[in-house]
Length: 227
Image (tube, rainbow, N blue to C red; front, side, top):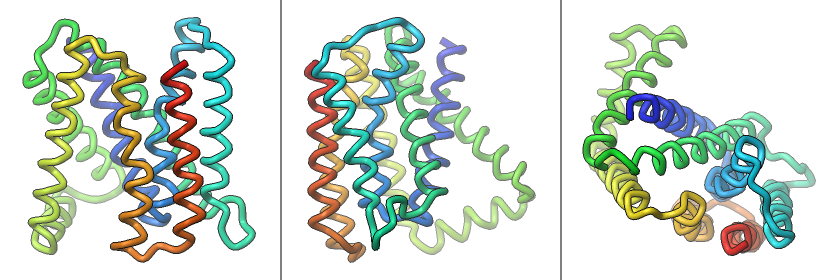
């Protein structure tokens, strides 16, 4: 279990870091759909590492995902809204696929509660190490954490609880022999939802454009899973 837990924790740490970095400089309605396109990465990993082949419909779905992910970013005549945010979103997407595959493997022998505890402990250690590596001392890191909690304690607590609970339910689905691509695909309903919420609560622009391509991206993911 330990080797898989380390892989899962590393993937989760990269996913969290990439997601936060992508959304810090970019719009949620642009980069969240890309981050959540991990079924595309799962298909690519299974094909490149394990030699699994896919039918033509899956390839069509992949093309839809790639095309919609690019066109989501079309803004003011520019194809790429923010290059760094795009790279961070792609890194988060790939990392999400890695930890999903690792989690599915771990649930064949481990219990969700135990696995989740150790993975989050490792993730916390990795992210703390990353903060220190970036030149932030332990005191500065703790001060930044305290500042965040004091600024929005209820939001942070709610986000933490929801993240933990959703991860736990996913592990339970894997324990019941759920296919990683299918389990992850169920979460993709959050793609169009995120675009709507970003427009309503964050007043992000180009709502209809982004909602349309987010829907196409979700359709592409559904085709990949069905294939």
